[in-house]
Length: 190
Image (tube, rainbow, N blue to C red; front, side):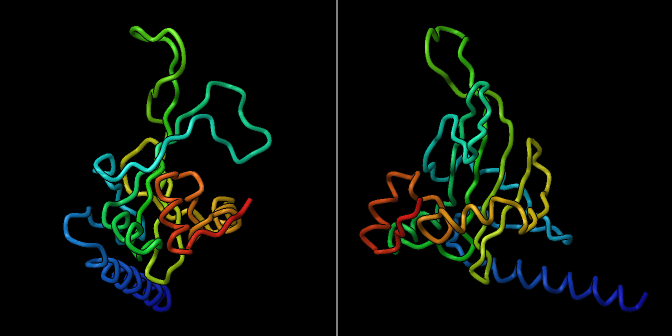
């Protein structure tokens, strides 16, 4: 039992050290990156006020893509991380990407053709930790704290194999490609 208590104490101290190391990493004005005592990421409730990088429609990284109505993906990044990237072509410690997945609609109001964004289906984050590694958190439709997605999930290997800048998909962010190429941080991948 004593060993178990020490493991809990060590875990909490590690989490506090992680949270403390994240504090102050991003300039004032950015929403703080926060975690619960259990290591869950607190939902970044103001992410829609962050820098919008891109939207995708019906994107899939699988050969067996769903043939139903395409989903929209919106990608946001914390403002301080964006400013650092624009200056250096790299993502600083504490960078947070938010992937917002929304359904698509076709019929509504005066729309006669095409698709527009519908209901929220899920929110996921991609976070650069103090050790320079990246972690993913899946919130689903909820805004309650989310646990880290295990490193055995395909998102990790996919980003490591195909991310053009520090495991991130800058190849899909047209406004950032130029910056990364100019700063020589863009690495062409399939």
